[in-house]
Length: 471
Ligand SMILES: C[S@@+](CC[C@H](N)C(=O)[O-])C[C@H]1O[C@@H](n2cnc3c(N)ncnc32)[C@H](O)[C@@H]1O
Ligand code: SF4
Image (cartoon, rainbow, N blue to C red):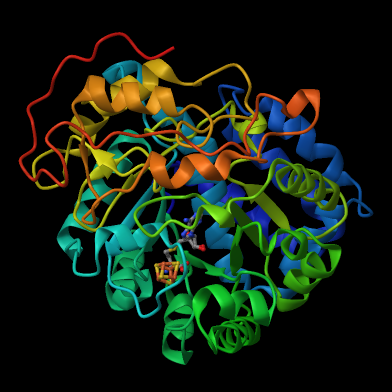
């Protein structure tokens, strides 16, 4: 039941979790004690030191957050999340990941994002996934094999995207059952969540969806199509009633950022019953990119400040994929913290970076991590010293050009590219306003060339030695 722990450790954890569930406001510290004992190398000591006073203070926002979780979420699902996400994927998994990093001399990710399918029942404006077309699929066996290979390296956290991943919901549930020690989540448009799926989630306990919403009804339906908001609210109600945890995924754009960053919207997410929210800034990816949807520098700063303010006061765990570069030490991609495998099986550094030099049908996960594209990423990260401009696509386009050229990676998009001509004009007026922001984002990318060998070269090249990493 606890493959990453011995029997005694597993029993101590189970005991501590039951004790916390009895009186979470006062007993939370006991769980912190057990986690501290499991962290034998002390590598999480600084995080534990931050969490300990919160756990001891019933008035603390995060203490209240946990109390609410204990009252509102199915206890067995909650326990599975502590075991799989916090211990297997993080405290214990990170130790194993570091051992693998030393052993193999390459990045080992904490999380893997996979697209089971490129098929989707919606057609949202500016969707990055549209570039892959809608006919690609990874087989169950391929997904299963990646999870097994990843476990060997120490990775226990898997995210699905797409396309709409719940088009493959039977396979997703089967994979949860086959890997009860792993944590799974999916970015989903929410429209395919029904009673049967919710019951399956309750049974397997290790799947937590992140439902995409773009604000309130007007903004969501503007981007996702009429009637989508109503379907999303229906899915959230169902999950709430079943005491199932879920989160939200928000893509903020020039059009909805004031709403997404408003207190009213944060309160709405809490009222819906969401426990976490992923924020993504709109990325101008692909031939249908809408550069006008990119946020201005002022809008970005607004979002940065709002997210930090509400972290102290709202019972909602938030992550801002771009603005949290400061916490993550820059770009997470290329296997440093995560990597993406698209529905064609191409290993890509990031969901927004559609280049690859390896594929699941020709390369193991480890071979992909050791191949030139990810190696070049490892050498180049962080792409500069300012973690407020972490992204090679938005903030350091020359670094991306270099990484693609040096690795000989090919474009994984199915549609023809329309690069700098589209983006350059949008850079106007997007430069940041204050000194801290002057060199940071809000800037549209310059050209990213079609990779050598051009659009979707299916023949995968043998490993090339990378030249030294980009500056
Ligand atoms: C591509 S979707 C795929 C999963 C699922 N169909 C969904 O809608 O959540 C994953 C997430 O990426 C976000 N997204 C789509 N296009 C984007 C873009 N160009 N820039 C940033 N985020 C984007 C979506 O809003 C969604 O939350
Ligand atoms: S954002 Fe999600 S739901 Fe919308 S078109 Fe893209 S894949 Fe489909």
